[in-house]
Length: 296
Image 1: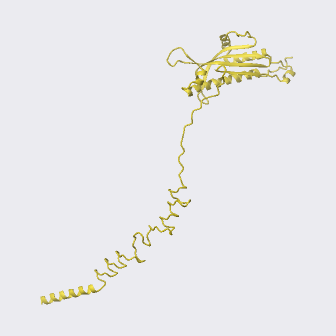
Image 2 (image 1 turned 90 degrees about the vertical axis):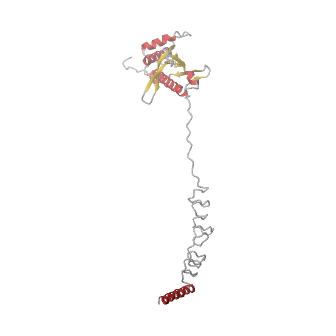
């Protein structure tokens, strides 16, 4: 009995195997539904029909198409981000979209102070001017005295010195200059001026930086006078520690090639103070005297 069942089982299996080889739906079948078949519907199919999902380069649905007729492809030469044809593209490699370079920062060269008056003939720093003083006709018509004569101008300039430097100091400055070599004491004021040199630290602060010394000459004639300031020296402490102060001519500061910024500080301070002195002298000599109505 067992042999009969075994024989029937073997025959059944043989029959099923033969049927599967004849049918196209078997696992080993070469039909279109097999996993390893070569048909158009298989995953490993070589068929290039329109319904496949093959992403090989050259496929109809590929995103790496090199076709020149597709304007919307990412690799297109017309509207792509890296395009060199379209001026409005966002390509960073475009010829017309060059990023501007950062401007080069350069320090401006220092410009030396050139406002110091310099006499090329004597090669000295010199402030000199002839100033006219004209009395208004109306002042004379009202009974005023002519204050433009030389002795009146002399007296006014002397008053200016006493107010600017002090009476005692002004007398000492005149004595230090000595007698007028031309013998014109009545119409000339010579003085050897010594005054503090004030350096402007900022808009509201100044500091003393030694002393300023110079020769002053004031000559007077009717209706005009001439001032002359020259031989400027800067008196400052000796950097070596010597008790004796050091003297430096302004011409040295003007022409020195070293420490030009520090030199200019001294030159500017000297120039500012001299301009103030000159303004005060002019204002004093040109001032119209007050006429007292009771003085008649």
